[in-house]
Amino acid sequence: MSSTIEKALQRQQQAKRDAEKATTLEKAAAVSQTASEAVPVKPARAPQQQPEKLPETKPFEIDLEKLASKGLISLTGARTQINEEYREIKRKLIGNAFGPISSTLNNSNIIMVTSGRPSEGKTFTAANLALSIASEQDKTVLLVDADVLKPNVLNTLGLEKRAGLMEYLLGEVEDISDVLYHTNVDKLKIIPAGRSHHLSTELLASQKMQDTVNEFANRYPDRIVIFDTPPLIGITESAVLANFAGQAVVVTEEGKSKLSDIRHAVERLNPNMAIGFVVNKSVNNDAEGTGYYGYYYAEREE
Image 1 (cartoon, rainbow, N blue to C red):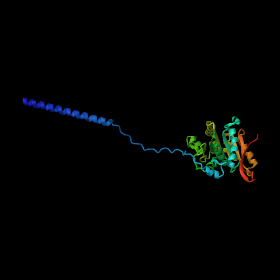
Image 2: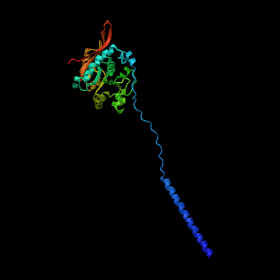
Image 3: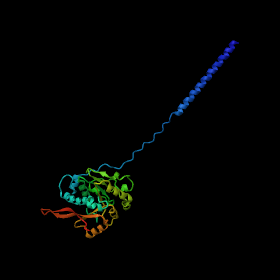
Image 4: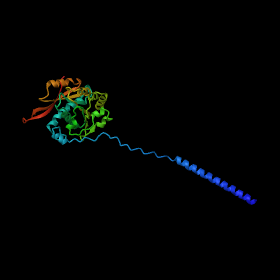
């Protein structure tokens, strides 16, 4: 009988051990499942986006020797006739911009260079003025190609086309600095015209354009801003730009420009501007009696 009892006790103990073992295995399985659930799932890697292409802002490299060989002023130290003539022209413009008369002008340091008709030398004059002013010790110059219908500043300076003023006004670039390019001439910066647009008049007359010009006029006290604008006769863009500038340089060509055209051109300008005239390709005689093309400046008489 004792043997039977001992066997029963052994069976009970074995059953107890089996139950404890099963409980341990269940707990281990539960812990394993919890740990598995706690492991974070690594998210799928999103495809890498290409960075947005920024506008081309590397400096323009102007070939100064080539420009001088084409008849523009020289910044290489040579003392040429055209250098001297543009020294005289710029001196009066700088005096208007920063001298006593400046207080009577709106945006006296904003100078528009224009003409009555096409092909009278306005872009050539604007480029030479910009280069000459850039040689000043205490002045900087920004040359803006605002002839958005037939831009010619970059071509005159031998530079490649880039985005410019119109892309900014259209909102295709965020800031005007995105289309304001440094050059290898330390004190000269350039804003090209950019692409043409059928709403160019409205864009140039916009509040955005006015705010931009006002910033040009007031942000840097030593800066002259030169706008190369379309001819005045028959084109509305120039009359719009005349409202922003404090000075106008009307370029005429000796032997070609008609007096009636010059009068008509002046009538389209703001009467409160300081208006001067550059006679392009005027025939002069030097001490030896040799004729040469020259440039001279005269201000409008009240």
